[in-house]
Length: 140
Image (cartoon, rainbow, N blue to C red):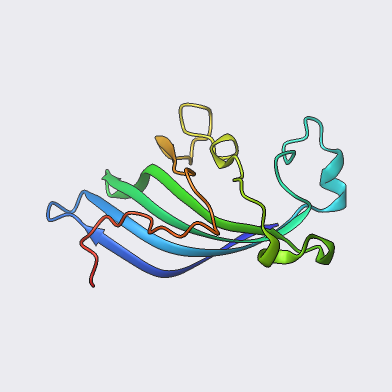
């Protein structure tokens, strides 16, 4: 289970109506069921057993034959914390990021519904506080 609850979305469509950018805040609740732990190959190996996460999408889209498709998938993990109380939760998050670019496959890699490109943006993580670049002028 990896539920991505997308919030506060801002979508900007180009004047031509063929390209768009989308920015979405994301709150995720994730968990790996006991039965999936024995998968061969272990496709969930880089993930903790259960976690909560906040992130940001800043994706690019294009319209082909009347169908919108993701052309560039950008995801910025802001923080990830285990549900296990022994870990201290998000107040004790260790620096480091999840290797998402290894989980999301592109169309070229065989995912027919995937994006053309996955742009890894994980250069920093909480408690460092920076603003993930906007595709539009910041309103303030």
